[in-house]
Image 1: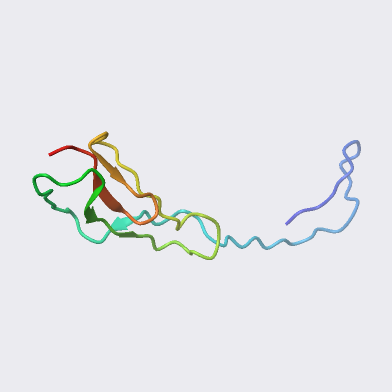
Image 2: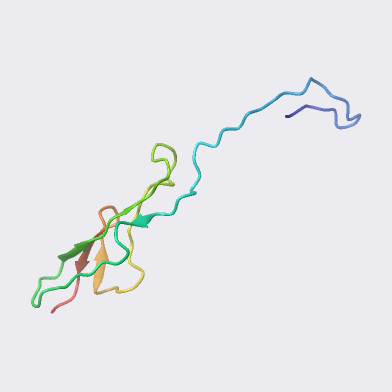
Length: 97
């Protein structure tokens, strides 16, 4: 409920109005990986840029509203030897084995 009132007299300037606020989506579901852990090996003498593994996550937030369901992959440890493609989750090796 909301109502406009005069600041000086505190008298209503109009009748109360009812507002309904609908929350379309909030970031209430964290992303979850398809597997708890991923294991991969890199063959000896692999070229720099060799694809090692693709990790996959999903998010139960509403993808039609906002960016709360958008997934962006990044590596927290293992750089500069490995990188991950931000949209696909493909991990690449950047080491000379």
